[in-house]
Image (tube, rainbow, N blue to C red):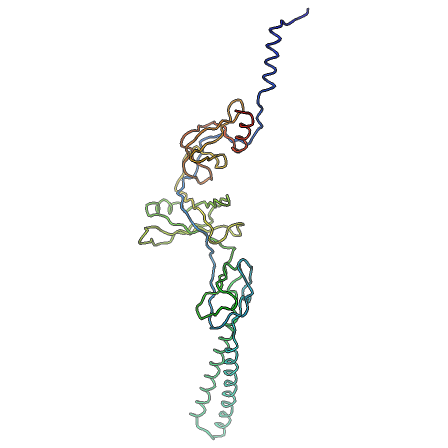
Length: 334
């Protein structure tokens, strides 16, 4: 039995096939399905990174800087010479003091022999001994001053800043160079008094470095026992793990102090698209087509995601590559 199609039926079938062939096909992009989850409730505070061990070396003698061996960013070892100060005057003084010490020692030995032969009194011997000890002390002091002409590293670490130039005059107390140990870093943040009880209860925090896109758990949270009388804030120290790449003193950070937990609907920060005052995400519909939807978001939570206040619901499938989704939508003329 033969089955034939009428002309109109054939045209309808052909139109359907042509429509399917011309329908836009969207490439699969990385997505996430939103759901309310248990997250840490946090209090964010602006912070700054500092070195746990840092030292600024100052000049101990006066003189011109005649040699500079280290600069900012250079690794140095403890005891390594970083700079040299012109110490010719101190060298001459040290030589003169050493000569006086030798002469005083010889005089003391001679007095001891004379005293043994009963030619001098015990008072003369005591004076010779005192002169010898005084000369010894003067020679030691002169030698120490001479050694201060070599400015050495107080610890093994990285030179953070060089504060003087070759040829400048160094005076006692003038800062010359700053060295810090990169292994131990911490973040300094301020906590207002009204949040102090919540933060002290858990003593747990996460650290965010916005420019680097890095999140870390604080190894230890230390809260100082006194408050600032003007700002009524308490300083907190949050210690980082050892040897964190890309983090250095003076870097801006954000401390997220954990104050409790609760269920929140969240969205990953990389899924959010910001255009001026408009904040939105691309939601994938049932036909696998990305649709831009405006949303209202809250603060960044401890898990590194943003709280959803309005615009999204549980079960929504959100694109994790909003720029790519927008380009695809524009190319298909949607």
